[in-house]
Structure formats: structure tokens, C-alpha cells
Length: 471
Image (cartoon, rainbow, N blue to C red; front, side):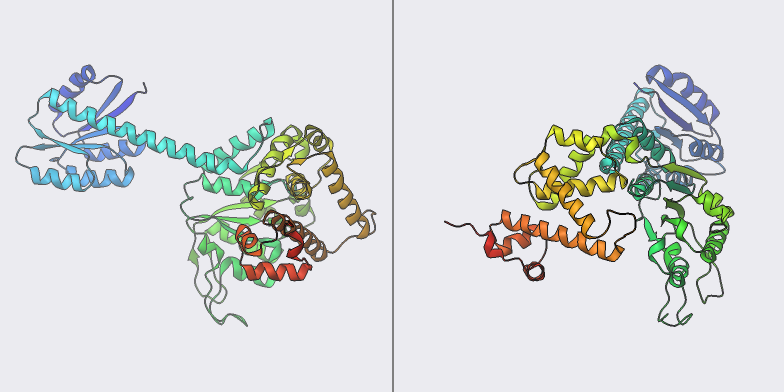
């Protein structure tokens, strides 16, 4: 049984001495502290977590009602039993309304007092157990998108939990496709700021002339197109966390203003004449070598140290190859949910083959590969024939786009469009097969309107009649 902590606050020292001498015989494994000074008692409560606080109503310097109010500000879940003189029932009722658990009138018998205390300790234990359970459930839901049991992944989980309970700036480093944003979201979700949403800015996606306004805000009329005030992401994230995704791509001019914001915890919107206080925890990610960028003067060294108060690294897939079977089965279930179907059976030879491959795109590349395998599987199993079909498609696509040699490179927009179209076509054909060409049913399963699905079919020149069952 875990030892319990109890505090007794009363200005009558004889009362305190008597209770401290008697109660240990009546209460098993309960450490009892006493204080005759309500101000010092409040300091004790700030420094310790008490399972029960027994306090008198009438005390000099600060009465019990005022102390009760202050205690509830420090620990809203505190279990408090008030001691009040006979005839002060109204005061006791007021205390109950303010959050006290129970009250007992003086003079009292020790057995009666012990009964009140035990009830309060039981209540406190239930509350603490409930809080621990909620914490475990919260942590489990935070980590449900993390897959892996290798030592590097276990170290990552431990690091996330350690960093979450601080308010330091965190720099998350790792190769593309290793889940840096996922780590940032986990740190925020486990932190004391999790009651407010994480605010994210994709640094390279925003043009330089707009990034300053996006981060720090602007006043109406401060530049062409500023038709109304914009508060900016720093203000939006005040009291929460701000994720600066791919921080290495921020222009030097913005770096200077960002450094000032981190140093002073103040920002000045464009066109404003005054600064605004902000309280945002900074999380940032990068897949680049910031030390090299510091050497070539494209990244400020002082900003680096502001961002890199503590750091965490996400392991590349080549360092956690033993986790590939777990990752494949995880992504298989996710794709099945996306398609509204049952997960496929992944054959052992397929898993062995995937574990022997190189994955320069890391976990993200593996996820996309599993998605294609599931889409192209003929039945309920992904076998070596399916794997070969996906490999052939990838090889054909690379050759046709000049990607097999070192000289050619497909434009990002073209590559994205091609991949999206290919996925859309595979997905639509899969869902039409499941619904025997019933467009209304297919649209419902896909979570889109019938009109939207028909537009896709026309664009891809797919005839739903070809999927209807023939008798």
C-alpha cells in the first residue's frame, strides 16, 4: 500500500500536538504533518501533494475559508476537511460550496474524526487513481501512431516523455520521412499546454514576403493587400506550442526577427507601433545540417542555440530494420481503413524482401509502398507476385520519366500530380469493385458526394458499368 500524506492546520498548538500523537495509531501508513501558521501551511501545500488537508476555520493571519480558496487555486482536486466550532454550521456549508469535501464540528471524538479522515483519504485515492488512468490513456493515444520496439525507438519514446514535461525549446532532427512532425505533436500532446491546439507553420511553403506577416501578424493597411488586422501565429500559439516545420529554410531576414521574438518573448506586428507579449513554446524540425549552414552564414548561430535548447533525433529506417514487419502490418491496417476493407495477409517472403531493401525515403516511403501493394493485391493476400507488380510499375514509371539515370529529374508538381492521379485511379477502381459499380454506395464508402465521385470518374475516363456484376 502506498504511503499517504496528510496535513493538519490549526493555530491551537495543543490540538496539533495531540492529533499528531494519536492519529498515527489510527491511520495505517499515513505520514502526518502539522502547521500552526496558515501562510506557512500554504507554502507546504505548494511544495507537496497531500492526500488530505484537515484545517480549522478560525485562525489568525488567514482564516480557514481564505486558506481553502488559496489551496484550491494551487490544487483544485485537493481533499479538504474543515474543523469548525459548534454553532458555525453556516460557515461549514459555505466551505462545502467552495470545494471542501467535508466538515466536522468541535469538540469532536477521535473515532468520529478518524471516520471523517478515512472517508476523505478514500476519496483522494480514487481521484489520484482516476488521474493516473487518464494519464495512461492519454499517453497510449499519443503513441498509437508510433510503431517499433527496437532500442532506438524505445529511446525515442523515453525522450519524448522527458521533454514533454518541460517548457524548453526543442529541435527535432532527422532525415525526411522519419516522423519528425509526429514527434512534435506527441511532445505537445503530453505537455501542460495540450489543452490548446498545436500551431504549425510549414516554413518553406510560405514565400519570404508573407512569412513575416504569417508569424508576427500585421495591421490593416500595413502593406498592399492587408485589408484587415492579422494576429499572426505567435499570438495564436500563445499559451500553446508553435511548430516551425523545416526551420532551416527560413530566410536570414526572418531569422533575425524570430531570434528577437524568442529572446524577448515579444513580437511586433507589421505596421504596429507597439510590442505584444507572447508565451509560445517553440518546437522546430529540420532534415538539414544546421552546423554547415551556420558555417556558410545562411543560418544564425545565436538562433540555433535558442532553438536547440534540447534536441531529439528520429532514427532512419535503416537503423530500425527489425521494426519493418510491425510497420508493414500497421500500414496495412491503416490502408484497409482508408479503403473500407479488411487488412490483407502479408506473406512471409514479402516481409523478408522488404526487410532486405534500402529505404532512402524512410518510413514514409515504406508506407506508400505498402499502400500500393494493398491496392494492387488481387485477393486477400499480398504475395511475391503483388510485390513484383509494384516493383515493375515503379521501374516503368522511373524509366518513362527519366528518373533511372542521374541526369534527369521529374518536376515536383508533375511527380505529385502523377502519383496522386495513380493513387486516385487505383482507389476508385478498388471501391467500385467492392460496390459492383454502384456509384452512390461507392461515394458513401469514400466519404464524398456522388457528384464529386462522378467528376473523378469522368476525369479518369472510368466507366462504372464495367464493374457491375453480370448474371
